[in-house]
Each structure stands twice: as structure tokens, then as C-alpha cells.
Length: 123
Image (cartoon, rainbow, N blue to C red; front, top):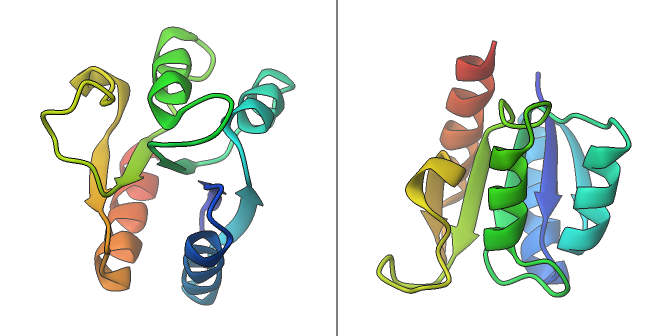
């Protein structure tokens, strides 16, 4: 299926997402902070979909999604934000910097459907 990155610094949340998406047939990589995700992207690792927690340590999900959007070689990678924040918060990136939002607590079926849709839209 798709190469999916779960960028989340909460081990429990990341574990649930990695397990569910792996069982759904995806090749899932867990990255526990935004800085490492950005470095790996800049080194040429290109996943099909990125799930990023909005509130990451080091480089936030907001900043990561904006950086991806601004980089011509990365801007085609769909970003799915995972958050418990309200939509009117200033911590959200501009709307064109992400493709979908999943609210915590999330429904795993909703997450898997969103990942499948974003991976299919990319092809």
C-alpha cells in the first residue's frame, strides 16, 4: 500500500497509529519529533503520506507542514494533522499547508480511511 510516516512524540498514540496502519497494509515508520522528520525529508526520504501531531517538540507539526508546503520537492506529500486543538487556534498552519485533520480522540477507521484517500489522491 503506502509508505506512511507517523510523526508523534506521544508513544501511546504513535503505537496505536503504527499498529493500525500496519495491519491495514501500509509500510509505517514512526518518527518521534519534527526535526528528525524534516531532516529525513531533506535527505530524500519521501513517504506517500505524513501523519503529524500538531504539538511536536522541537519542530511543531505546524512548522513541519509549512516547511513541506514551501519546498518544491516535498510539497506533493499529503500531510494529515492529528490534534486535539480547536480549529480557530493560532497554532494551526495555513489551510494550504495540510490536506486533512483528524481530531483526538480519533476513530481508527477515520484515520485509516483518510490515509487511504490521501495515498490514492497522490498517485
